[in-house]
Image (tube, rainbow, N blue to C red; front, side, top):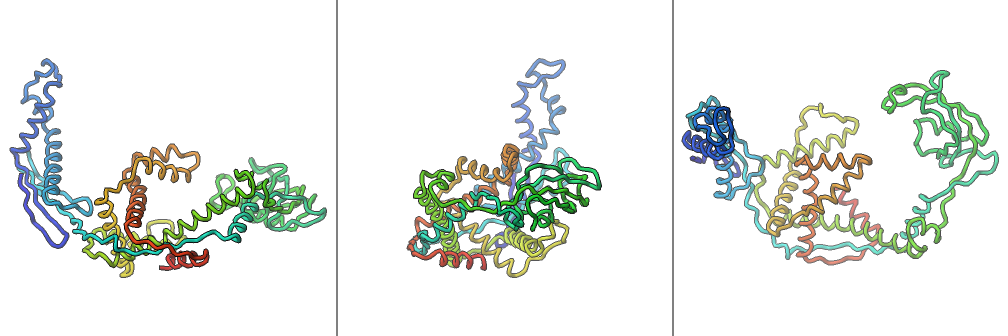
Amino acid sequence: MQVTETLKDGLKRGYTITVTAAELEAKVNEKLAEAQPQIEMKGFRKGKVPMPLLKKQFGERLMGEAMQETIDGAMSSHFEETGDRPAMQPEVKMTNEDWKPGEDVIVEMSYEALPEIPEADLKAIKLEKLVVEPAEAEITEALEKLAGTAQTYADRRKGSKAKDGDQVIIDFVGKLGDEPFEGGSAEDYPLVLGSESFIPGFEAQLVGAKAEDDITVTVTFPENYGAENLKGQEATFDVKVKAVKAPKPAEIDDELAKQFGAEDLDGLKTQVAERLKTEFGGAARAVMKRALLDELDTAVSFEVPPSLLDAEAGQIAHQLYHEEHPDDHGHDHGEIEPSEEHLKLAERRVRLGLLLAEIGRKAEVTVSDNEMTQAVMAQARQFPGQERQFFEYVRQNQALQQQIRAPLFEDKVVDYVFELAEVTEKPVSKDELQAAVEKLEEE
């Protein structure tokens, strides 16, 4: 087998791999010899089938296997000897497509090599960690929101008109023309006006209603409605308003605390303060991570593989297009040409991604099976009732596994660098932290 270099231009590499007919023949004979003891064929005892007959029966299939294994072995040896790491899957193709048994196999291999990535002095990096201690007012505000979620409803004074936010208790019968339709009726149904939990337009027609009122509500079902027979149909609902109730926030007391798993109000306040600290800590980490990436971006410079740059720029352009055109859900918008700004952002992302990957490789940072399982479980919760199917889909999809593993790996590498860097804590207010986060979103 012979490997000849045909291209070395920057990070681009090209090679011709020649596998001789004799090598392939030897590989096929080796495979047949390994399999011969287990092969049974009519007229011969097990393991006694003559080699020429085996070659005639199985030689063509084994030749294909031999080709693939030999070429894969040549590629592995090449990367081991040269130390090259391809940026993307190498492109491999046979040049003699009219190949016949007894001829050499000639293959062209091309790829872009990952660049040599210089080491960054991680201990020289200086970072500022914003620290926010939850203020009493912020804890009180959070408690009020909890009380709002635990609110009850109390009857309004007789004759009061329903307003947005009120709860009405209703009986209703839905009709298409004069005929009631299946699933369109209920009794003693509690409906919060303004919750948008019913068909568009339904709740608005009950604003101003009083207990004991009989109202006819007319609506048109959306075109994307779940029931096929109701899509786009105009329907009427005969509604009986049985009660109008005003929202009544829960009291911020020990009883509220028990609803949320705390022993008393002081315990709930402690829980809320810890949750706020976690939220503030997450926001502060995002700010410090951006500062770290900015430091690394200026500290290290190297050539970026064009294939990775083009792929990332295309992805950025595509994502921004859909953000600017939220109504365009398809992919028939034609090719989106990345701008100079997209290419500049892509170059930063690719360079930092390669640098973090190299730091993680040298530090032997890994993502454990347990960490992957936890991450998959978190995503599976977005599909209630289909968690098992989602797990199975992830198990069979290597690309999706890598998509889930990549941010976990990056976060672990970032934490590793945080430990080496010089980090100074800076106490700030919630508003100052919020301003720093908003600045990230603007950039």
